[in-house]
Amino acid sequence: MQLILDLDSDVPIYQQIRDQVIEAIARGDLTEGAQLPSTRQLGTDLAVNFHTVAKAYDLLRQEGVIRVNRKSGAVVRRDTTSGPPEDGFEERWERRLRTLLAEATVQGLDATDIARRSSTVLDSFTPTTENLR
Image 1 (cartoon, helix red, strand yellow):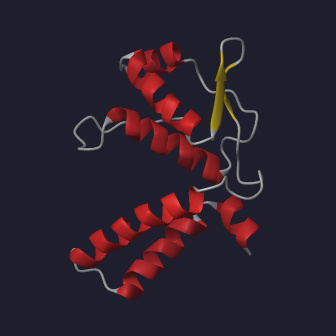
Image 2 (tube, one colour; image 1 turned 90 degrees about the horizontal axis):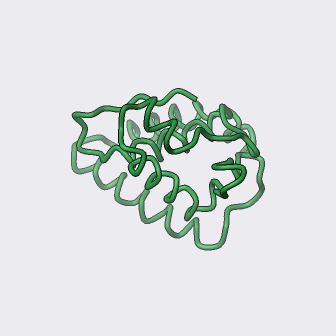
């Protein structure tokens, strides 16, 4: 797993880490049972404080995407083949989606362009799109 951080971004580093782990799982680069680097190791690799990585891992744990324990460390709990989403996920996701679509609309993208771009991004997550078809 290769993570690339944008230190000039308005998006906090822990959020960038969380988002890139989610994208790696969606692409199939990380599958259920895959071990993630320790917080200290990833912090060293990315040249960030390990507490920043721990915050990202904690978000992923709260979302049910990874499990963390002292012996095995952080391990992917869910991948694109793990079955239906957990309770409440769809409602939370739809609220975030509504905001993203509103941002695109406010910035002047029309519905056709939004749909095209959404389709292109969704297609980049091959395992997910294959499961939806």
